[in-house]
Length: 449
Image (cartoon, rainbow, N blue to C red; front, top):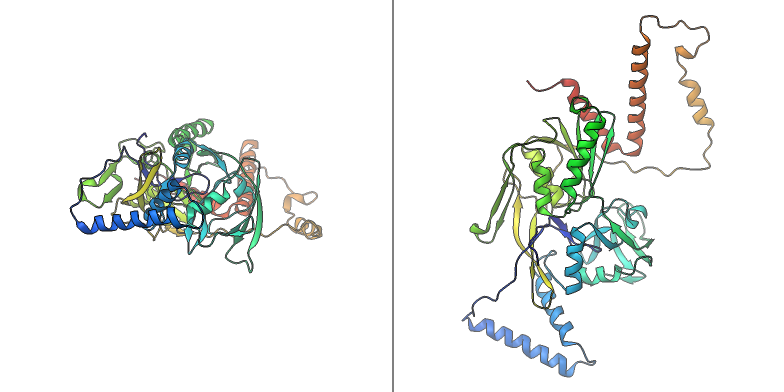
């Protein structure tokens, strides 16, 4: 199995995207002379044989061994587990950006499946699943008491099939059912667009295509704007990004840094640690950067946010991130399966670990929940508001403004239209609008001397 590094943070119901590295074949260590270890292995063998011989129903020895291996790994932490051959193969497919399922990243908390984040444009996202939701039942069956892998297996199914999940959400009095149709999840790693004079880079995951998508998308937006001089800054939107390949998180961070440490990993043994440094070159050419994060931003997202924040290269706004600061190594094992084992913690350039703490934004900005639109609402109030906002220019016979040229008037009208578009954006996405306002403010101050 090819070696690669993932940096998402948690078990995924429909595709693993965790801060993980893939290693080469595992070889058995030399025999341990400690008699107690052999005694414990004898105990395992004794129980295994008794189950095979005396359990009320015949069981497959292979299933017993896989369950024992997985139980050993899951007892360590929420991110260590055994991957049967099918799951190991799917994991590699997912890092290439396409897989089947609902499109949610999940972990386990207090026995229930917790949504880390829905993935943009997927069935779960369209159905309104939110970061922080708890999935309590799948098709009417409780997931309490199941391992994360068992719960995930219940949520898997053929593309086009329907699933009903029961969701408990903070602020809701009662759990509620959500019907979702499974689909093939095709991840677009980065979507680039321009809002006003700001380039917005929406990074949804860290797969093989993330850095190429980001660099190409940014270049196209800069070209469309007529050059970097016409861009006031960049918004790097990492909200609800559960992570992915660690190598891509490093490349994205390096894209906006000229030098210095990006991230370091420290394992059980000091010699196993790694440090990754930036090389010269900044795609943003020194323009201001604002990073958006929330509780659905995990692992690889936190690496990027932490690195640019520590280097004071970006202002981080939003809400506290997920807080997954460990690295998993995926090791091939016999039978074409794999073992995902937590082998290190990662640290931001200042030496801080975000494990269980997350990245704290420089400016906390909550995303208001949009009130439902009432189709039966009376439009009379809107008409009244329109009447109240009449200006001097609306008055019959008002004097014209003869101090401005037609070009100056046109520029004023264009600036006003941009301001009105920004106001609409605040209603659609308050956090993003806030980020763009920050870039406008920084741009107004001019370049650093």
